[in-house]
Length: 214
Image (cartoon, rainbow, N blue to C red; front, side, top):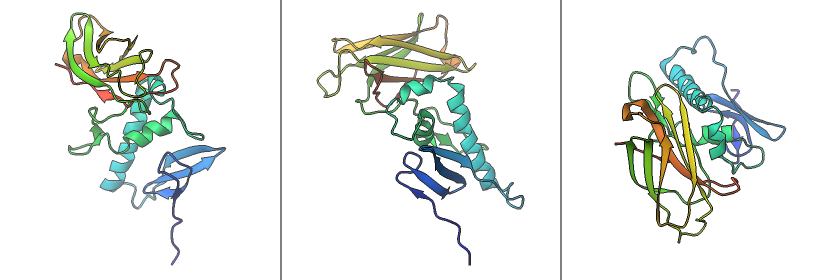
């Protein structure tokens, strides 16, 4: 009996890939990893599981595109042959998808919009204020790899699809606050909000932290 070729990978989605992984086809061309949905035969194209898998893949692709390039800033530590897109897909498929309802949706509390080797930010408070979205955090300057020159990055997406971003230098204070400027915004207007830190030269980042708003 003829067997389907097995997929080979140094690390799924982030290493050199070839073959078939589940319902996705992977390959490496000119040192670039390619990921695409497997072609479905008409006899099984409309099964519930097939539709769910294709829908989940499309959800993450659409989410990446909805940020209009901002996501690329959060994934600068790209191994050779990779892109910020493949790193985003690896970080969020299928972890950031909620399949508990009638249809799959993005779980924004689990979405990763930045990832890297720097220490994760510690949020102490977040709230809607008159000026916009206020986020307070501890700088933890005594932790290795934490520098006063680091840039704190706060990003959010509104329910209308607007992308909001503000940055500030970490500084020497033990605590800090950053405000995403948007006068009159309400918590119901915010689809998601995240905080991460980036090195002064932009070559490294921390993993993003979801910001719950009150």
